[in-house]
Image (cartoon, rainbow, N blue to C red):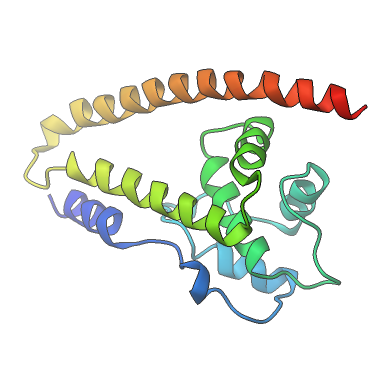
Length: 175
């Protein structure tokens, strides 16, 4: 099946830009929106990033403020991660994950870890796609992928709940 073969190929080959490929100059909001729209695989247009979303991520503490009106590599790295994670996590859970993952790490190393895990996940999913499946086999494959997503989300939520109480204790100590 051509469509499955194309999906498998995209999952195996398409990756966001690596840190060193991010622009060295600051980008304005409209440039950031355009850039991020090309960072992740999507079908049917997906949910497009908007300036309002970027501003909300800044207000929610997910993203550092722009330097003047320009966004740099750090912003592009965080926005790439946020746009991928928001597909499966709440803003609160995304913040918990990013805050704990970034503790003591510079943004470049944090992005490298994200990139590595994303690549692994995409490769893992590509492995289960058999382009020779018949139309009748697609519902079972979709079910397998959905249930794997369910199981992964359960595990992720439990792990985040183990992380979150530590955050709350640290917040109370600060006050």
